[in-house]
Length: 350
Ligand SMILES: Cc1ncc(COP(=O)(O)O)c(C=O)c1O
Image 1 (cartoon, rainbow, N blue to C red):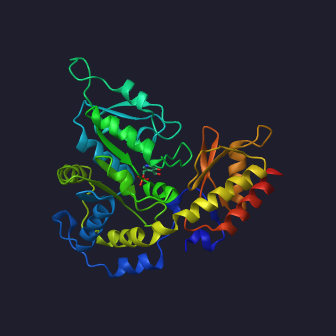
Image 2 (cartoon, rainbow, N blue to C red):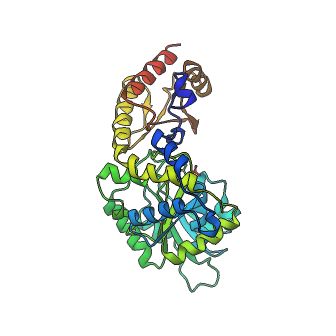
């Protein structure tokens, strides 16, 4: 249990605030370890093998974070000066500190992904044909599933597959920022391979809904992962007895995927209750574990509202562009959702 939890604070900021379970802590304590830069850590090797099998891909590598996993993928797929087609509201475009350009030296071609998945037409339009000496070679398409800023929207397998197939036929590689790919698989009740088998690489986070304290996994072909390993080292992400982290990751992958639909149920309840309370909840076609909302026009200022909620013991995702985000996760149940909405109503009536 987190210190915040013990103090009765309801933390809806993100699914990254989850605390390691007892089983994770025990596994970390007991894990056999070695120097992972030499490939000697048996627990890390077990996690990477497990993850590769789960996604049906040849190989997998641990990354310190989702951001690092995405960056390693970009650097392994693209040479400097090449182009990547990516969603204009995707995490890689907006929330990874410009590392695509600043570190990878890759040219982003943003496309509309406000509904979650870019359309085939938008990918075709963004693609610069090879053969023209002026153009950057378009090397990669990145997709995000579930799509965070579109509302945590999971992309249906048929739409995802059609876009990925089209991109590959155009000669592009396809990388998926699958920070929450198991939420998408849980939502549609499909095997995650339905997604991973259609693309060249996929990154997923252990530290979000799955509840591990740290880390992400990048999967792909054996050659690709060898390149990613080199980039990870260059980025300072080669770690030593990292089996300590891998042990928690293994428990997360084995034990926590099965409970993600509880988070989705709680988020659906939260959305209904917030609507009833008069907040402008963003409608989404499919809801996983996120709820975005805005304050009614007549209402208090954004920071006044967030500060009063925090004082009352409720933490919300910071409002960017006037949107608040609340995320359900393993540390929150139906009772917490109801209590949060009661607190919000009290703040709104101030
Ligand atoms: C969709 C998405 N991708 C990537 C990341 C980056 O993960 P990390 O915070 O581990 O770098 C996040 C983080 O919230 C995310 O929501």
